[in-house]
Each structure stands twice: as C-alpha cells, then as structure tokens.
Image 1 (tube, rainbow, N blue to C red):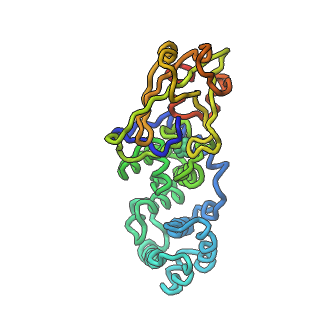
Image 2 (image 1 turned 135 degrees about the horizontal axis):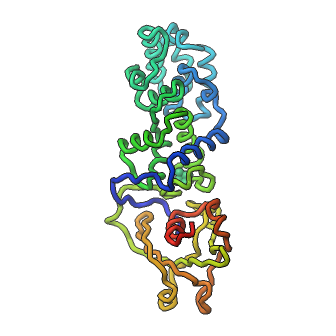
Image 3 (image 1 turned 180 degrees about the horizontal axis):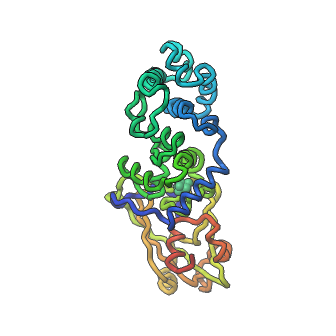
Length: 343
Ligand code: SF4
C-alpha cells in the first residue's frame, strides 16, 4: 500500500485481539522483554521503595536524565525511613536538577505517611496505594504489579499507543485501561506491564514504529498505521489493483523500501494504481476495502496476472508459502492471503 500516516476509525467498538490466542501474544511479548529489555537499575529490584522512587522520577522525565539522580537519591536516602526522617529541604536538594519539584514534596510527604501510618511498609494493593499522596492510578498499579505481583494493568502514553495500534483504532481512556487489563496475564503481571512500556518506548515508537522487529506484530491490526479520530466524512476514494500470483507453492511478493516512512521493509503483493480495464476485468478475483488516513481504498485482487502476455509485469520475488508466516507482511496483504487460504 502507499505509505500511510493514520487509519480511520470506524466505530467505538473495540475488536477482540487480532491474530488468535491471547496467551501466545502474552508469551511472545514476555520472551521478547526477557531478551531485549534495557538493563535499568529499578528493574533489578523488587523493593517497593526503589520502584516507587523510579516511577515518580520517570514522570515527565527521560530515562537518561533519571539514571544519575536515581543513584544519588538512593545513596542519600537508601530506604523510606531515611527519607521520612529527612527535612523537606534535604529531599528537595537531593532531587535538584530533575525539575517538577512538586514530585519531590509529595514523595517526602508520602514517605512520612507510610512511616507514620503503615510502620514503614508499603501497602501491597493498588487500591490502598492510591490513597497515598502523589500516587495515582498508574503509579499504584506499577508498584503493586512489579513489587507485589498484583495483576493490575498500567496505562501510560507508551502503553496507550501500543493498545490503540493493536486494536487498529482510537480508544477512550476507559477502553485503554479495560483492554490493558484484559491483556495482562495473571502471572508475571509486573514483567508484562514493563514489557508493554518497553515495547512502546523502543519498538512501537510514536513516529517510526519498528513493526519489522515487533514481537506482537501478528496480533496487531494497525501494523504501523496510526489510529486517528473518525475522518469518514472527509474520506476520498482511490482504487488499487494487486496481483496474487502463485507458482509451485510460492507467491510473488514485493518488499517495501527500507526507507519508507511506515511499514518499512514489510512485504506485500505487487500493485498498480492504473491498469487497462479489459485486462483487469479478465483476471479479477475479489475486491477488498481498506481505509488509510483520509483515503478509502478499493483493492481489486487479480489472479494469474503474470501469465497475461501484454500486461505490465509485476515486480517482486517468489516466496515459498510456508515461509510467509515468518515474514513481516502488511495488514492488507495478510487479509488477502487469508481470504485465499494461503495463510
Ligand atoms: S506491529 Fe508495529 S504498530 Fe503494531 S504493536 Fe508492533 S510496532 Fe506497534
């Protein structure tokens, strides 16, 4: 398909996860996280104090900026008792350079409350954690899942983007939290939450998602297209013809340029925006609809096109059918190959 920047939203209904088993999707993400996650100091601990500190510092602040301050703060206040015993000025001094000083004031206030009301032990449920100063829904779920194994999903900006692309449409905040909770496995919820955030930060990036290396591409409806609010009223219509040619257990496919702004390096069927009408009619097999940005595409799929003498020759490579599941293919191509029973 032509490079696309967004995908139109068709309804408020959130479709079930694409691509089959949710269990396989969870496992694929966890295996990827285990092998690819960045080695960050707060991921080497299950101490709720250290996890809480990292979550507060990471709000509105980039990882690289947090790393040094996190180390210094923990050296100065190694546990919650040390922080609660310090003056607010000392806490602010240790926070110096991170900005958004309200976070440091709330941190200090929260430490005093945990020491004063909970004998220095963090409450172990997200519900109880949310009662504490400076701890909202996201932070409470992050601490409860990572430190205490509570199956409470987190939704930050990165997770929300992954969820919307998986669903192929814009989700309301409520739908995002619901979908995150549905996806969360009952075991290893902390790892899974961190894996979703890591995927959003390093692979499913805002502008150039790296779908080609994405471990959950198979379950993603958008595959690089960015859901946007409903633009149906402004849709323009275009037609595309693509060739579905088979030969000796192979299908002819084309790889998108590695420099394409979206779906770079992904495989699709050879296609044209114009073809002689009579020839196209003769080879016509089926018609599909696909909406991208403000364009509503009608895709005419032609069969055995390569064998028409005077027709333009499709570009591409012959790909063995049993190799296709291992390749990154576009969502439209998947739809067409599935309709023909090829995958
Ligand atoms: S396939 Fe692409 S758009 Fe979908 S979740 Fe993975 S990186 Fe994001």
